[in-house]
Length: 128
Image (tube, rainbow, N blue to C red; front, side, top):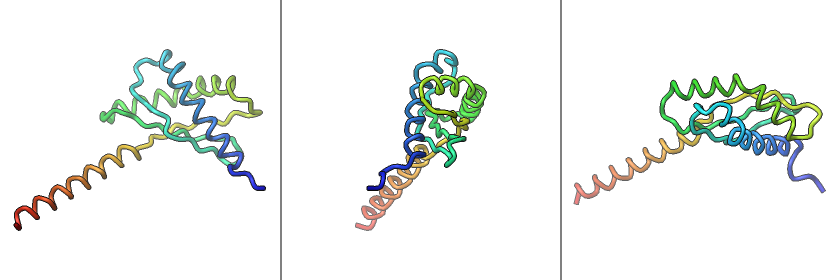
């Protein structure tokens, strides 16, 4: 019987969970100026040497997002060290933080759809 998930998927899921916990508990005490962030996903390369960590920012200020992303990039050694103590792996992947704007894009598209529906309803009322 074939396995349902590949090793890279399982490692990515575990890294996602652990990095989210690290950012919530240990990183917030070290860098309190970082705004509201969430780990929305993780991808691990096939050789398990690199991990992309997708971060969602709950701030509309582009400068603040760039600052927070740079702060994460600067602290990736600390985060990787804590991750190494939590996960039993021979080699811990190097971390790359990437901004995930899919939630913001989804909200923007949803607002556009709602606006189009409201415009259609207004046109139907005008025609009656």
